Structure formats: structure tokens, C-alpha cells
Length: 138
Ligand SMILES: [Zn+2]
Image 1 (cartoon, rainbow, N blue to C red):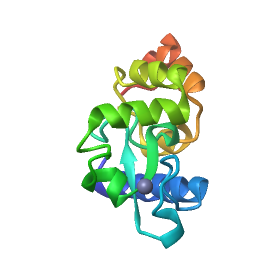
Image 2 (cartoon, protein in one colour):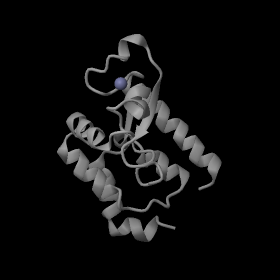
Image 3 (cartoon, rainbow, N blue to C red):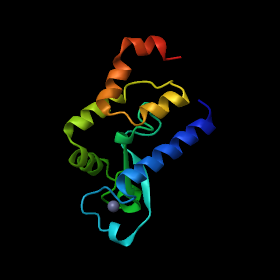
Image 4 (cartoon, protein in one colour):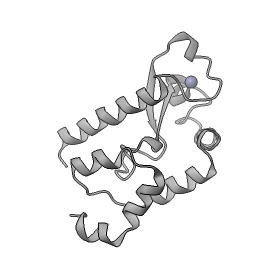
């Protein structure tokens, strides 16, 4: 995929994540939500990983404090971040997301548009099906 397509997928995935969360920080009891602070999107598994870059389940909407600035933030305190993510989404979620992070995504724009809304279970089936590796990986 070329950069304009990647940027377009980023825009769509970000917009969906904002919609899903109502544009408020997902961290439990965040006190910034009442003040309408700006929020960022955070990728639990780095967005360099294309198998998860646009997958909603890998994206958290967080205030700047919980994203990069605070002592309790995903970037400054990865252990806190992992604990918070597991608290929000569960242990099963984390093991699935880690499994998915081992896959390589060389699919085209349209396929990625479909993949971004799939559940982690469906994504795992998609990547682990032999048909997929024959028919779709270019
Ligand atoms: Zn927050």
C-alpha cells in the first residue's frame, strides 16, 4: 500500500475510535473527561505493526496525560499501561492481541477496510486460515 492509502485508513480508524468512545479518555476514572481535554489515539501494539494498526481492539482513546505525559501513561509507564489495558479489556483480549501481533499484513486497502472492524477471534481465524495465505497474501 502507498502512503495516501495508509493515511486514509488511519483517518478512518481514528474516526471510528473517537466515535466508539465518544471522544473521551478510556482510562477508568480519568478526571480529564469532565474538562473536555483533547484526546489522542494510542495503539496498544505499536502502529508499526500493520496487522493491528487499524484494528479497533488495538486502539485506545486517551487524554494526553494518560497517553504520553503523565507518570501513569501508556508511553512513560508501560507496566501501568499494560495493567490498565488488561483491566479495561481483559486477559483473553491481551493474549489474542499478542497472537495477532505475530502476523504480517500485506493486504490491500479494501481488505484492510474490512479487517479493521473484525473481532479479534475473526481476525485470528482470518490470519490462521491456509486459504488466506494462498489467496490473499501478495
Ligand atoms: Zn485520561
